[in-house]
Image 1 (cartoon, rainbow, N blue to C red):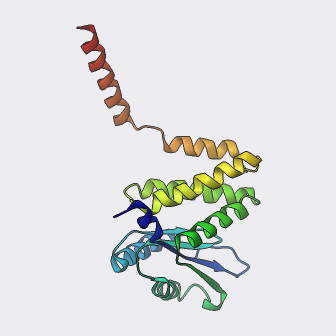
Image 2: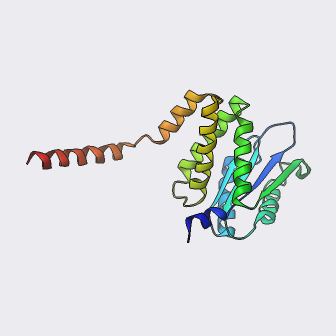
Length: 193
């Protein structure tokens, strides 16, 4: 399958609470169950970003599952949240997903603590979904594009903190360091012979 065609199959459902109280729509443990439920039913990659501002459900499919996702969210949050206080936005094309993602990040950049929290959450989700073939690479591309634009204008709140978090993401673990040392030693011995 063509990589550009793959990117076109990215869709999302954004949910915002219009309630004055800012809280998660679902607990972290419920999000894991919910994400697994969606993945099993959509039969493809699904990614749920749950914040105090709302929830974003990204999925990879040729089919539109927005109604199914909306009804599932309402079912999962039935006892905790008044359904009249939820606003849903469906993004059914790559361009709509891109627009929505970028608008959210740019809006968050006006609120330093929200931007920092969202960025940390996004980086954490990247770590959790390392095996993602479609969603994480596409969303990371969107993220890096917005990040570069904000960097050009000097409008990245908590720049140093975010840089540290991003660098920590690329920090090799102990086994990777050991492997690199072994390779280096082997190459040194090979060159000395």
